[in-house]
Image 1 (cartoon, rainbow, N blue to C red):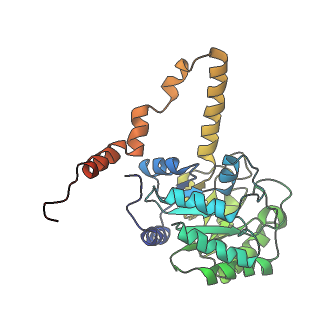
Image 2 (image 1 turned 30 degrees about the horizontal axis):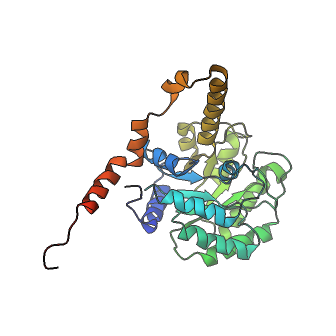
Image 3 (image 1 turned 135 degrees about the horizontal axis):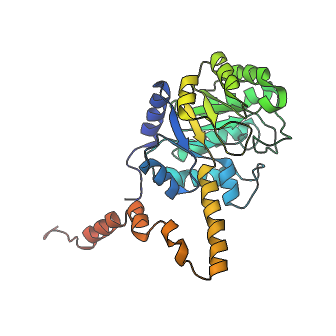
Length: 301
């Protein structure tokens, strides 16, 4: 029914194996638990929970206003319904190194396969906007060490994101990435790279799994999967694609409804009731309910 058939430990091991396989993992960002189920049904290898998407869903900008418990709650709701490994955006760890340590354990308890911590200062902002500030390498090292020490499952992936490319330049971002690996990061997320040459330089310098952030309307070109495979990247991330598609459709639908006074012309663009019920597993729930309702104890029990 509406729950995963795998365990968090199993999904974490699977995620590690996928990253070690040399194949590129395609990772769309889920905008809610149901969309995570759709990501799985569409054949993708992993799913993502974006801090920007969660903030937007709450009607907030992506400037560090959400809390670790809000993020963990959405994570738990999502991992309940998908067998895919799920990676989550944990911003800066939601505070000082001690907060980052607690965040790791909250996300482990939520059933995630891993998280990434970034080297921005608070209040953070979207990685493709101007005006970012990065913390010192020493402070980010403390943040990562706290996360490593707090981790209970060694298969839980700790990824470090560096936003230094737009602030300090490519060479500094590469140096930071190396330092973060030394501090215990299992993988690196280089934010806001500006072209294939920069992706190639990062891959040549850093010998751990690398994530390519393919967010729309940002600083990074939307490289295709073949290019990323040739560059040696491990994850192709599409963090906000589904939210942008959904919100574009909602805005267009509202305009049509207001103008025409009926939703009749929108029907061909809608997911049907039967398709929704199929994804929700209505038939499985009905069968389960019937089995329980008709159950009686054997005589003499």
